[in-house]
Length: 436
Image (cartoon, rainbow, N blue to C red; front, side):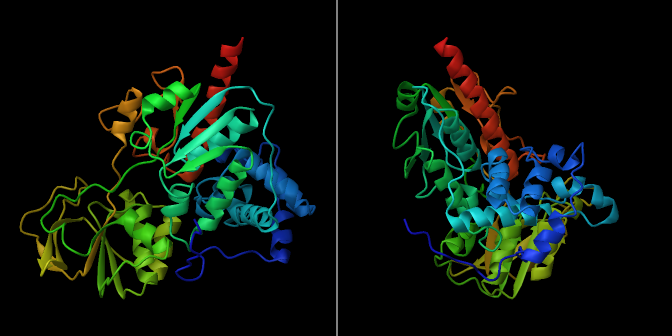
């Protein structure tokens, strides 16, 4: 598949000049306790990769980054660095932390542009591992397992690997080509990536269990759940992930109109809002049921949306989508309790202009897939695992959004990669113990 190159306007991240790179790289103090390393979920050796940039060793820098984080090029663009590595930088006290994310992007961009293959597969162990899902967690698990010498097959339902990085994050923040390069780095290790294959449909879970020595379930989450209100089947009502996917692939999202209403307060809601603005919609408003401080979107995402012209309305719930001739014609809202309970307040209903409504209120879980493998999960469909990502089955592991609990910071791309790495290490330990 030739993935279309879609920009939807200029990228958010500005590439550093060579002079800026040298200035930033030489600011690093190479701290003995390196708080930046501890702040990174994948423990990238930040001083080491920056030091290699300073000496002109871009290959060594890219290898240091990608060794720790198999999706380090994507994370250079989407990580909330102000909360992680840059937030821990000793220069943060002066409000001038080293631009670690930009330096990471500089080094990984060099690897992409030069077509460099960074790693090699390990000596074959004779063991076979299936990875279900080719997103950040699946790629991380597969990459490390291949470097450990195991034969790995990824089963991916989409036409291309990369998961959310490829299809679900707006191109002006993360171009699909970046995620596809990371997948190619994994494929270069001999990992077979079977795309267009849905485990549980195209191939059964029992077949996978029978054919492989171990399985890593690394699926993300499903579609946005329904709003459960009148009018949501009208033309002009979107699942935010479908909307972003079609726009990112250069597809036709149809007429959006003058007013787009986004329901939700997370990063996907922000992406849908900024994408709408860049598609030329003059009025885009996000509606959230609680206060701004409860929004799960990263701070830098919210600031970017405000710069793009997105408006925010808090303490409101959608009550009804107004429909005329089968199409969205407005949105009825109701205010919620300002104490934060999201309890609707009768008598506060009003109708606001809306030609398109985009729902971004979370995602469903792939419970049926877990059931097919016999994996125990909680009532919310979250796979239950131990510290090594092992499920209730000794040869089945879970990593990524399928085992992330809501309410924390777990759903970051970098966290997904780390869980994939942990799963790979646990699988390797399990398989080598079997050999003895």
